[in-house]
Length: 640
Image (cartoon, rainbow, N blue to C red):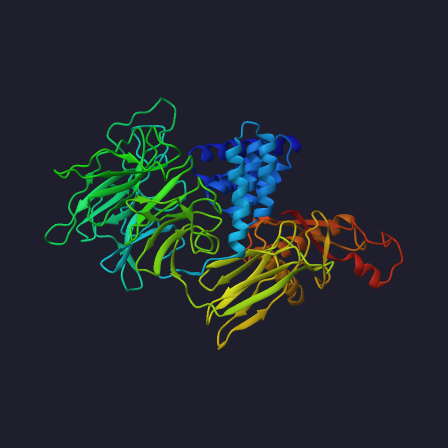
């Protein structure tokens, strides 16, 4: 039996590895999870952690990297990515500890890189404790469950990028290898589904003052990714990025090919339609990418991002200017802006202050928005825009629509999809405050380093870390309903509760304490009031109430896996009791799964009479109360 399990696990791992190599991470996750459950291995854990990181599921990534760093044979990079996952989840104090471990193990890590990681954690905690007077709102009328980002103003409406499902996009014409990597140059990737995400390809959408967004009315000349647009002030010319499959692909035999991103432009014709796209001078699809175009208001300067050879980092920002005959001049690197990291989404406001995103400076995590203020004819030193404009995730595509309002794109927690578009208001009225203390439920003592999350109904979330005395505080908006919870590694999340400023007329301080239960791995916890009718396994109404609580705990703690164990007393035969207890455990698990919990997160186990709590074994004379003690249902956390 053990040999068969091992063979099955190896087979599933091979299938998972094939999907992983082709960027099919959503499929690979299912297969690696199946392989891990058949046989836990370093390889399965490592790949699950990576897949969740690539798909930006930061909670699951943290859970798997935590497990990976405790597994023999883990590489130093596991500690780095564990730190990154913790940082993504606002756990900066814990992230700093993992970065320090990584620096100890990775002898080649430069002092500048180490300091950048550690200083970012320290700075983020300060920024969260002292947020900027900015209010963000998730643009629910724009966002979908897919990726939505890169909003720009066009004809007093919004043009943005999305990979949402759209029935007007052409049907798939040929099934082949997924986009970005493909082994056979004669096979085109799917024209319908982008296998990395499992969604459609990116498209430009137009959102007017109506309930739905429509495809932006132009022909980009590509059936693959189209996005990140920029318009001149007169709105007669647009620049945008796209991917296309070139006629000649330079590739090495047997090695999957990565297709690069290009910039194209289109001019509006007299009849109001857009002309055929023209390629940008510096496109070179076989060597490097160019993207994130920002065209100056007068159309004379184009700022863009590229990973072309000779740059400082992963991607740099370049600018080129039109000459007297209207041709683009030399592309020049913005040396004072670029870092060893990745720069993205350049933008100028009406006062010629420059905004961009980067992960190469001290920041909160991922891409942070920075401002380089105008300084005469030049730009001053770049300044981090702080919290809550920046978050532990990627924050980019920052634009103003007027002096106080604008848009930003982010994959911060609480959004509708992977990336969402948020509107922001600078210097709003914040007249109310929420304060409280986080406590350890068991000891009654205050808990430090709890991440307290305050979420509006649209999912927009503010976070802060409790101090050494467990204290936290937030400023509140007027007439707003919030959800409040607390998160700390090794503890169950605090039960979700509500806070409201609706109807408050004057400055008020609201009070709300949080209580967190410690998680004891592999310790059985008895569920009270889980009873079954004699010789039956169906779920009674009184048992359903308790199982609903288990389902709620699993929903509020999405990384926890549990075993649900059912036990009988010693009456009836051993074999019968094992069968009955397994049926009862299966019924309880099925009930919880029907509440929306993934099957792989909960394991049913019938123990029969093998784990009696007293001496009431076969043939012993015991009271009904003593037998009842053994007829129980328990949950055990087997992964957190």
